[in-house]
Image (cartoon, rainbow, N blue to C red):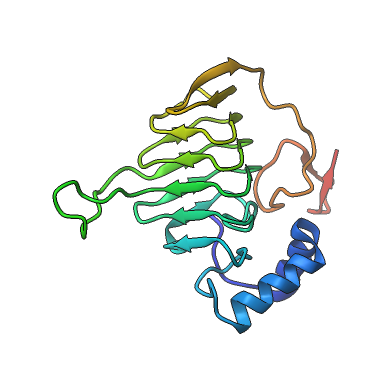
Amino acid sequence: MVRQRYNIIPSLRRNLEYIGLKNTITCFFFQRLLRINSHVPWPVHISSIVVYPEKIERASWRPYPGHMPGCYIQAMNGIRIGENVRMGPGIKIISANHNTYNYEIHDEEKPIVIGNNCWIGANAVILPGVEIGDHTIVAAGAVVTKSFPEGDCIIGGVPARVIKMIGGYQSTNSNFTDPKRSDPNIILGEGSGEAQTQ
């Protein structure tokens, strides 16, 4: 899990690389000056809402849940997000439903788990207790009501079902990987202790 403590220079550099100068300035203005989504330590789009960000566990500094427009991320029961996850605009990740007999109470459920190398398409909805395995692509507009832990698949529809099985993820790009985590694409230089990419 990435701790939410901010070291301003590295986080600014990451924001510039990941979301660009314009979005970095816009997020800073709305989050830090106007205090919209100010409780979230990463950049969030003004039209997105992130609830209980302290219960979101990210395996790496990326992604920024809610940085795309129109997202609703509710982590009351927890959300665990793997490395190299892409999230489209308008997604909804909802970890707790209201109780059927008392709408003021939220039901307890397992945390939502999103594996490594996943892509959540625009306007997809992920509901409480769902586990999405590594390298799963959630099609735009899908409503995921059950788990797909096997991974390496494309899911879509309402409710979501497996549309197609696909091979394993093949990227060797480690530009956005946290250098403190072990990564097969990073090797240590002999005796120097410095990381080098292959």
